[in-house]
Image (cartoon, rainbow, N blue to C red; front, side, top):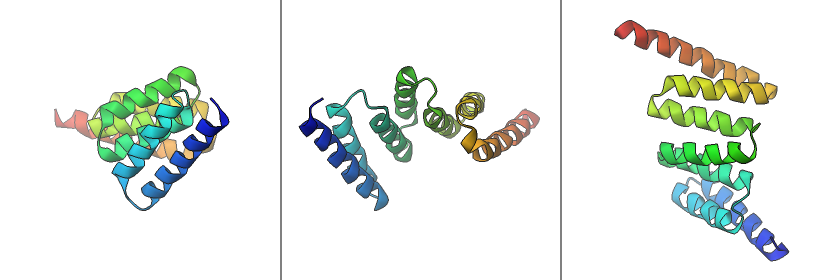
Length: 132
């Protein structure tokens, strides 16, 4: 990718981040998608697109985006954590738990936050099992 395209990608990311900061989810999503079109190999941009997909409620699309990141960066803890959040929204607690466990393997720095999610999931899964 040339310098101009790189500058365009950076400008679109900054624009998208500003839109996200001000709550304009759709504009942020569009900016990130444009950046991804210019730099389809960028895991960072794909993570931003996936994050906006979660905010928009496009959980299945976000899982696919996170999986694409993991395909190119198998140790990307943010992608696993994001995928866990998407699975939570879909009510698939087993896959959410597996995703968070993978995130934990790849990033000890987030251990406390991820462990809280795992503890919450365990409680949720136990209460669901008791309802059947």
